[in-house]
Image 1 (cartoon, rainbow, N blue to C red):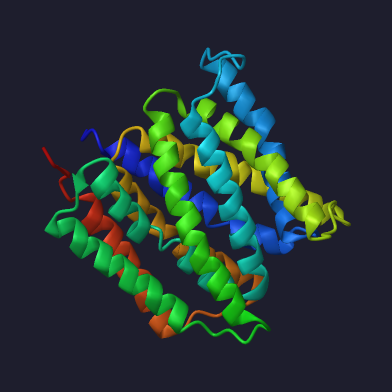
Image 2 (cartoon, rainbow, N blue to C red):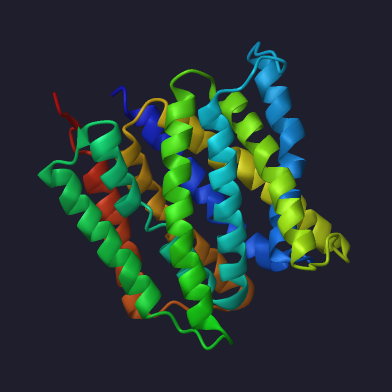
Length: 287
């Protein structure tokens, strides 16, 4: 088995799990930032148990990179969850996942991972598919443009999170890096929710279940991605997770009747083709 096969499979699993997140945010009977708070808070016991199972002591000081990852992830959640409120699930997820542009540029200079032609071909295909899905979405939601802008800004936070988590994974396990980054994210999301005057607790059982589902998706999704980041180039990983919008759009079609146009379907296909092409690209490291 190729050494990249298992990490690639973990990335796909993570992308599929996170594809459910925007739909669960819609179902959570609370504010967008508050949903992010419960998502991370409910995930902490699971992440702590995973860390202890790996024999890691919670008393050991975490790396600075893991703490920075938590800060960047808080920005990611705050912008993205509000973007989901105002625009379609497909748009919010596609635009938030344009982070490969940010990640590739930083990885080129910070990690000396120069993108080759095959990788750039896959990136162009994936981004073209993502933009096609977003530009042809059947929207009509009030404030959709504002939601699109918030979701596009999320890509910057998500890209920075990828970089920081990649750094954290160089010296510690995925569960430990996720635990400490989540410890930073949770209080920030609580403060944001309180400052914006959001309803903090879900008003229904379905809302609580959605928040618990967010936690499971967080552990399975971000956990799988964090694990794979220790084994794959960060630029490759950032493109593979562009599969998220495809899953999110399909789930939204069944839950919220957000229809997919033929052009959106074509965009989804282009995105997946780009993911496969980028994954097969060799990594070039500058000397």
